[in-house]
Image 1 (spheres, one colour):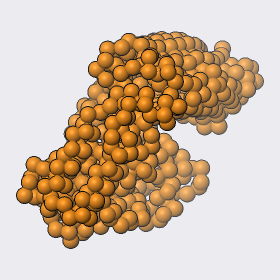
Image 2: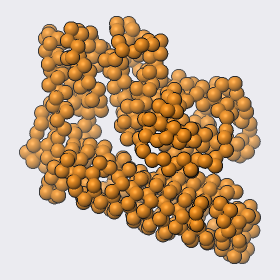
Image 3: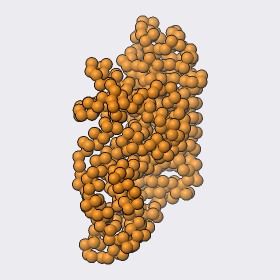
Image 4: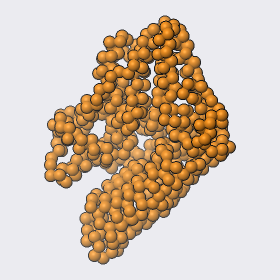
Length: 538
C-alpha cells in the first residue's frame, strides 16, 4: 500500500470509523484509540483484502469488533427470545427521508434512540444499520442466537416508532411516514458525515513507513503491527511509537526496528500481577519498591489479594485487567483500592466480593456474567451501578444511597436474586432492569422513584405484591408483566398521580390481579384508563 493509497482511505473512512467507535463506546478518548488501532490493522492486513473497493465497510466492521471486545458486550444467553416474541413487526422504512436533511429533526430521532433503547439494543441497531454487519455476524460477535438479533432489531424499530408517535402527539407535528429506503441506515450515515475530520496522526504515517521498510522481514512486520495494536489505549503503545521515531531519527536499520518492536511486544505479553507495574519507560518495577504506588496503596492489598489480579499501567493509571490463575481459584475476593477496573470476574469461581475502599469508582463490566457470585458488597459511596446481569447465583444485594438510577438491564437474568435493598432516594428504574429475576420476592420501592421503564419487572414470577412509589409519574409498557404466576396485589398510595403510562404497564398476561386504591384518589378516578381489564379494584 502506497502513502497516497493509505491517505485516500484514511480521508474517506475516518468519519465512519470514528462514528462507529464513538457511538458504541460513548467515550472520546477510547474512540480515538479504536480509530488508530483500526488503521494499524489496515496497514498489516491491506494486502489480504480481496475487494479493495470495499475497504470502508471492512474498516467499520473491524472498528465495531474492537469496540465490542473492549466493552465485553458478548453474551451467550438466549433468554431474550421470549421477551421480544410479542412485539409487533415494524417495517424498516418507517420515516420520511426529508427528516435526514434537517439537523434539528435528526437530533430529535437520535435523542429518541439514545433515551428509549438500552445500550445492548442500541448497539445492535448500529452494528446492523451502519456497520453493515449481517444478523449472523452480529449474533456470532455477541454470542447470541441469530433470531435474538432479529428480535432486537424489530423491538428497536417498534420502540422508535412509538416514541416518534408520542413526540408527534406532544408537539403537534408530523414525522411519521413511509420511505423508499431504510431510514435508519441513511440517518446514521448522515450523522457520521457530521464528524469533524481529524488529520492523520504522525504515528500512523510512521507505522506505514516502517511496515513498508520491513517488508523484507514479513514475520517481523507482523510482530510489530501486532505489538502496536495490542498496546492501543496503554502507555506501552506510546513507548513503541516513540521508539520507532527515535530509531528512525538516528538512522538505525529496519532490522533493529523489528527487533525493538519484538522486544516490546514480548514484554507487553508478560502482564504483571498486583505487586508489579510497568513504568513509563516500559520497565517492570516491584510495586513495594515504588514510593509513589506504595503511598497510594494500603498494606492490606498486598496480603489480602497478593497475586490475585493482573494489572497494567495504562495511560489513565494502574488498571485491573483480569485475574491470575491463583485469583481464579478464590471464592472470596476483596477489590483493592487505587485501581481503575477493566476486567470481569466471570472466569473464576468467586462467590463473595467486597471492596477495600468505599470510594465511588467506575466498575465497568466487573460483575457481568459472573455466574458463580452469590454476594456483592458494593462501595458505600458508589453513584452509578454497573451491569450485574447473568449473575445467576446472586441472592441479595443492597443499592448504596448515592445511586439514583438502576440502568436498563442491570440485573437481567439474575435467576436467584431474592431481595433488593435500596438505601437512598432512587429516581428511576430503567427498561428491563429486573427482567428474568424469577426468584425476586422482596423489593421496597422508595417514594422518590418517578419512572419505571419498559419490562422492568418482566417475569419476576415470585414477586407477589408491589407497593408503587408515591412520586411515580411514568410507567413503561409491560413494566410488571408476568407469564407464570406473578403479581397478585398492587398497592397504590393516595399521592401517586401518573403523567405518562402505557395501557399495558400493569398487565398480568390475562391473569386477574387486585389493585388497592384510596377512594377518591387519582388512581381511583383513572382506574379504567391505567389498569387492564384483568384488574380488580379494591
